[in-house]
Image (cartoon, rainbow, N blue to C red):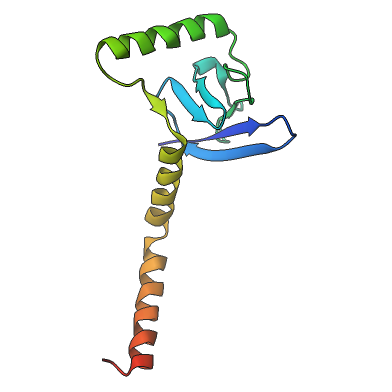
Length: 132
């Protein structure tokens, strides 16, 4: 899956940058609540060589660049109502799920190194304890 970056500028001048896989939900959870995920709010370079970027400002519902914010808000509310009628929760990209996915991806990329370090540590423990 392609990687994208979520940039979350806050009121106090800081910005939290989060690398994540492409998001397949209509809502993105950030520290201040849910934000709509629309196709016109994802920024990419012309050659598509860099990861796409989505700017989500603190306290503002639509991400930067969402030109149809009123229509998007209506559509998101409609989808939430439809999900409630079907007795389902609305589809939201949760912060903890994205962080768990990053941890899993890191282990998947570095499994060989973790395995080799584990073998070395096991050998050292066996030498220190006398092999028992």
